[in-house]
Each structure stands twice: as structure tokens, then as C-alpha cells.
Image: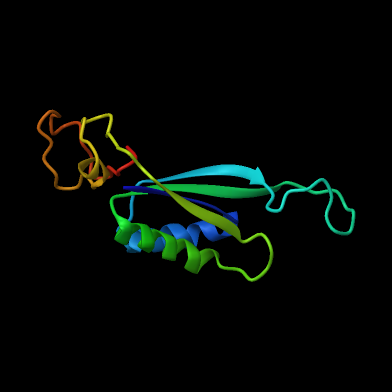
Length: 133
């Protein structure tokens, strides 16, 4: 399992999310962040450095195939030849547990639509359930 993280411009977020959804990738955490690549106290022209507002995406996937799909969705929609397009990276994840149901690892990353869960009554689950719930 892998966690893909990316810091990108906020105006790219909608297209990235649509592309991820079209590729059946669910369970995405989005955070507002500020930062600056190549951080220094001043720019080359001695102007003060400003921290820039961005969004950070965190997505846990089950295998290399899905990691590459996620990275291509981000790359395709955030690519910009100018400075400040962002960065993405990935880490291996030791384990995942869905708190509500106790499912672990790959089972915890699957969508809940049409899935029968033994230890939860059917009135509790929803059709909007995602891996981050």
C-alpha cells in the first residue's frame, strides 16, 4: 500500500479530483497549506520571499498500479512549465484500518457501495461511503 501526497495550486484541484473520480480513485484528504519551494529569505533579486497558498492531497492506494494512476491524474492536471507547479511524493504504508467497521488494509480501501459488512447493521452504512470514512 502507498500514500501519495502532492502539494499543488488550488485552481488545479477540481480537475484533479474529477480525473481521480473518473479513474475510480476515492478516499482523498485535501488540506489548505502554505509554503515555498526553494525556500530562502530573499529571492534572487533580493525581494522578500512570500509563502504561497496551495492545497495538499493525501491518497492511500493498495498497489503500484493505483499509485501510478493517482500520480498521472495529478501530473496531467497540475503540470505547468512555470515555477510553483508543486511537488508530489509517495510513501509505503504499513497498514490501514477503517475505524467504523474494523476492516483492515485493502478491504479498508475499497468502497462500501453494495458491500455487506458483518458487524454493522444495514441502517448505518450509506451509498456515499468512501475509503476515508
